[in-house]
Picture: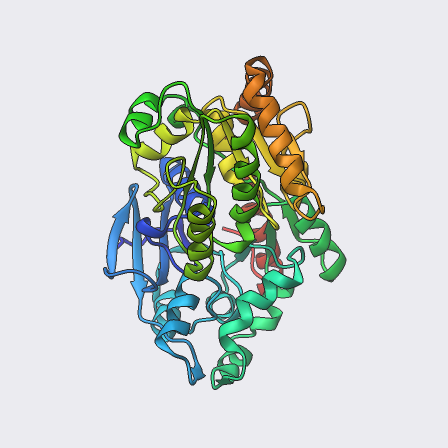
Length: 428
């Protein structure tokens, strides 16, 4: 058990598993590390989704997990697995009890919405503690197709958990939060339009530039039988229709006609197995099995992840929807050029033809446009170096985790002031 302190920060994501890592997990881990370096007792309370251990320490941060369920009648095992992977609206009364019982809490930091977010809200209000909510996956800036896919497992299922949502005030979560944190500018603009208060802040994700600065790209190529002369295209993200690897594969097939030694590596956990199967079918049908491969998601501390960035010639993020795009920061930190979709948070992260290039994933000729940009980068190493250098400079100057955590501390203090006013007590 963690010893009680007066500076305990409890982060609550829907799940937190090293083998199923993503951008949200990276953010929580890195800000928790910074908080612990500053003397806080930062820790993670989450569900047992996709996990086998109730307690562990990840990257120096204590993680406690609790039993949970999806309160719907008629869910199949496949439905439950799909919701564990992505978007499940779970219920964990034991986690709620642990939040109520936690001593020495300074602030609750929720990284989740719906019922679990409501549990954070209610525990904070009962304890008269401040709570903030980070929007990682898009709430006010998410395409309808993406929303429908998340809700698909619930269609025609009777939801017996609605009374718990009402009890925990899930629909009041963002209105009642002492502060709402948005990782993307477009998300923040949407939040300001929809919410009735002004306790909203833009706080981008960050990157550990020093950690990604050095990696053994040659060893990664050798391990995966990719020649040193090959033009290597990399994508690191969930294997998921939102991330739109299908567009990248289509563009890569076109690229191979002009750049025969081109290779493509897709790294990420498969949150949509049917989608991953379609990608593999495309690879086989287009005779790309010797030059395009899907690799499983890697733990954040796996040196092969950093090596992959250093092995590639260009990093591509062709997402249909992207609240931020932390992997672009990682690519820049490894001095690699970035080609990204002109969507969501990427629009304010990347500066076209300065720190990277944009493509429009919704355009009729998106694959041709992306293939054309990749052909040009293959032919112009000087352009690759120019874009990479500008991206690296931006990552170092604006997105270091220490600076992000300094801004987060200011948000915490604003939240504490609001909570003190709400509960009619002076801040200690």
